[in-house]
Length: 56
Image 1: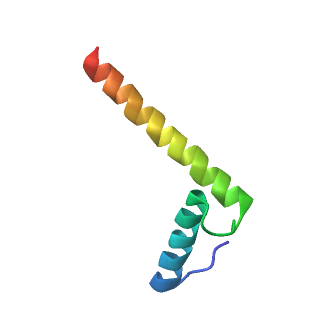
Image 2: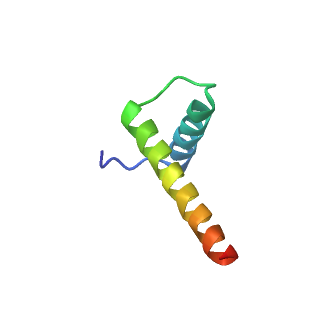
């Protein structure tokens, strides 16, 4: 890591990661996919907690 990518390359990489999660593209890196999944679950948990706190 530590390489600076052009905006177009970064956008294409993000698109590849998103399509990989949807199962429409090959997995670029297991570590990056796992990190994205964990981050997504973490954000989802935060949203659920905030909603529960508002109701309570």
